[in-house]
Image 1 (spheres, helix red, strand yellow):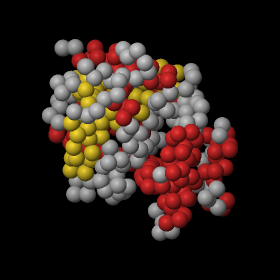
Image 2 (spheres, helix red, strand yellow):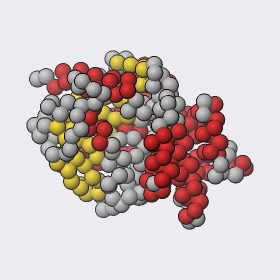
Image 3 (cartoon, one colour):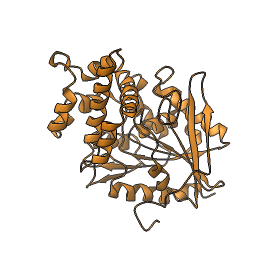
Image 4 (cartoon, helix red, strand yellow):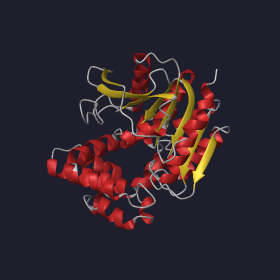
Length: 321
């Protein structure tokens, strides 16, 4: 175990671009041991991007860690592209990356939307998944999105909610996802940027138990990243995360209940409330659910970091032959 919060900073021993369709090319990287036990980390969003800190959840002397930017996000190209950008195409991208790197089976980790994608991948390719480590669980349901984008979370963050409402006329506020989608996909560049910043800052304002001013400032100052993040995320949520029915993951969870799984969940997670993790635990009874009492949604809050690293340490046992 590391003495501090994270394992030491580390640079990739390999990175590259993988063409996954006629349109999309993914950036990927590997850190740790070249002959280490394989694990893939899935970032949040949709439309988020890699952070170097994700590399530091894993013991570099044991793991071979694969990380990549999902379609349209981060260093993947074309940036912000929505065509051929759905949940199930992302699932196939994970599988293409596994094959490209000549990995037979791997542990799958992800937080927030990354947890959604990890579960979707496991339902499609259960034989390729050694174990699951999830944080800030989202099941991609309409009720979760209604909570966050239609006023539920506003009861805890009324000041931030007012700023989220601001770009939308009162007559359109009955369906905030639809209203934001209209602006983010429109031709008025000023309105697009205003909506993108408001969307992104709303999420960053609710990210952690204590405000993450650096995250908020990033999206206030980086219009391109705000637009990429907001546009892709809204595209997914307006389309019910491309699940039919929207409760698909919870219904399919029983079929992957045999896969070892640990969930690290913030008690005060406003973006992805603990009810989703609780429901997943009930569908997958052998899953170990650790509800952390002093954190919100961010995977970088101190106690969450400790619990995620404990999970990656404990799950080393899954690789014992």
